[in-house]
Structures are given as structure tokens and as C-alpha cells.
Image (tube, rainbow, N blue to C red; front, top):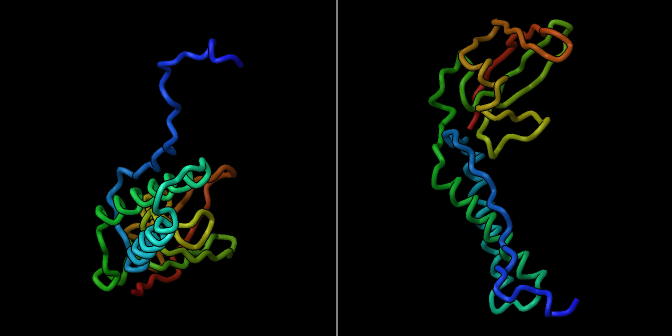
Length: 166
């Protein structure tokens, strides 16, 4: 294309990657969750050192900006972290940091650990404290039941056990 058809004063395209959204929820963290964030910061800083100096190529410059963006996110999460010591939680009821075994009416058991948003894994055994299911569990004691509405109807779950570990 001829330069005659390019607008000279057009703004440069934004080369910065979009920022990672930071949750508006309080940032409660378990000791493990805090360590995960600290390790992530350390890892990103080490990775960033490999990009020191002038970056002429687009690919390294883009990668450096992605690392810087991720570092801003991790630092924001560290600054807003509210550590919760599981040892200070009530041992007889479900709260933040609890490891819980629940059993569905048909006998299926599920183990969950209620953790901070950055520590939770999709489909894993860790569940964000802010998730609706975790909110429903809060305050329950061993032997109590809850009903959870699913696409196929209500499921009845019973709390089998509650424990806390550091």
C-alpha cells in the first residue's frame, strides 16, 4: 500500500496487553496462597531480568510487557492480601481455610478446601471462598445438610468432616 493512503497523525496501536482484572472481593489468603503469590512475584522478576536492555524485536518486547503486566497483577494481589490463619478458625464449623468432606445423598463423596481466589483451581479440590457453593457451606457443622440446586434438580449434601491445617 502506498504511504499516500496512510494517515500520518494516526495513533500508534496500543502494544500493551490488557490488564488482568483484579477481583473487588476481599483478598483472603491461606498461608499456602500467600506463598504462591510470593513465588509468582519472584519468578516473574527473574523472568523479567532476561529482558533487560533495549528490545528491538517485537516478540521480546511483547513478552516483556506481558511479564510486567502479570507482575503488576501479582503485586496488587500481594498488597491487598489478608492472611487468614486456619489455626484461628472455629474447628467445628466451615469457614475460610477449611478442608471439608461432603457426601451426596447417593453416596458420592467430595473433598474440598476453601481457599483464596488466586489459590482456587477450576474443577479441582480447592474452591474459592467467594464461590456460591462455598458461601452456602460457611457456618455448617459436621452432620448438617444442604440442598444445592443444579441443572438436573436439587442435590442433598451432608457434611462428613471438617478440618484445618496450616
